[in-house]
Length: 313
Image (cartoon, rainbow, N blue to C red):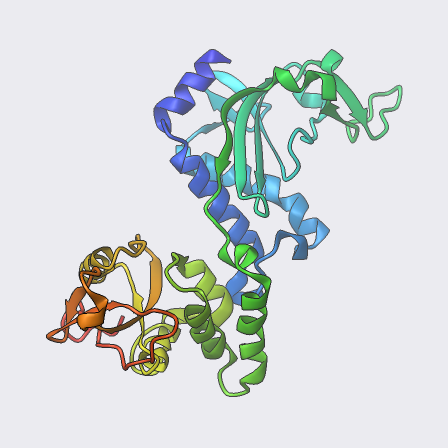
């Protein structure tokens, strides 16, 4: 077990790759672009059951594990079975994995946490789930008994899962965003995306969120100038910073969260004046701008500097 742990840590010292796979797999199951779903609880039972298989496959591809002869993986010459559960310690161990090492994975999108550990599937430490006949019905599975939870050797425990924003914003804000789409017959996706950036400011928003609300292949069209949210919100003084270097620099100067790859941050700005004193500011369109106070009247925002000439993002 130590050998497997060391090998995994060598491949992923901080758990960043595991975290990326878990986030991507949950998003793959939700399939927001086509379904508009963002909540694990909206998945069908068969989809939830399929999550374990997808995570097993996606981890195999991410880390280049060899397929095992009897178990899912062969790591450093050792057979390893991969088990996932959305409820911690509730992994279902099949009879063929008894006595083997299991890579046990847990992730909960509502809690925003994930864990990965190793467990030797000792029959004496497991409780039966389902029926096993005298002939050894292979449909019967086992779970770790509560008193033996300590047998899990955690590699990472209770790490932060990349936030599913739509699950964690204020309910009132979410309602406004979703209802904006219902109220727009012409372009519900555009209405929801624009309302998102209006309601959720000074906070990182990733492209998965935009894709889920836009529900279209070219979802970035709903963010860009030339008719997207940047155009729609400009009159209200709201800027949408992206992952362009110039956008990132301006966001940093305003002491906003800096958008990372595939992320956006919106904020309402006003032109800097004497009343703003030495407040942090950034220069755009030949003028200085600061983050607006809630009671300040809206001004038309400047055009954000672009990295590439004629770029529309």
